[in-house]
Amino acid sequence: QLQLVDSGGGLVQAGGSLRLSCAVSGVTFNYYAIGWFRQAPGKEREGVSCIGGTMSTTYYADSVKGRFTISRDNAMRTVYLQMNSLKPEDTGVYYCAAHLEPVHVPTMCLTGMEHWGQGTPVTVSS
Image 1 (cartoon, rainbow, N blue to C red):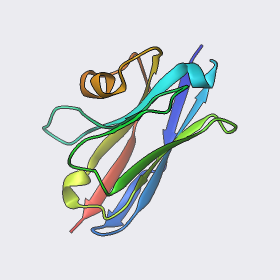
Image 2: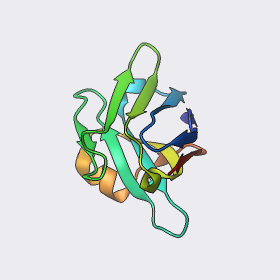
Image 3: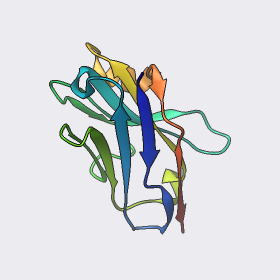
């Protein structure tokens, strides 16, 4: 059974960096596209960045392009989200999610995925 454990959130000042991790277990790792979504208080959930499994196609929301980098380590069965130049508007709970391929990565990043982690909070102070 697929399990997602997301971690790495915390409190950081504006301009700082954090790296989120999503550890995947219970399934063949590269069969799944993995995404990061976030939900700020009072706002709808939004797709931040997603990465395909076998082809590693990536997608970034416009708001994070040039600041965030998604990557996957197949040996470690982990997907990372490196977040640099953080802004207060990046604050929210970040969720790792997974979807069995084949998928259209940008579409999945906009609409959501099948399986979800428990979330890790990120707070960026001004």
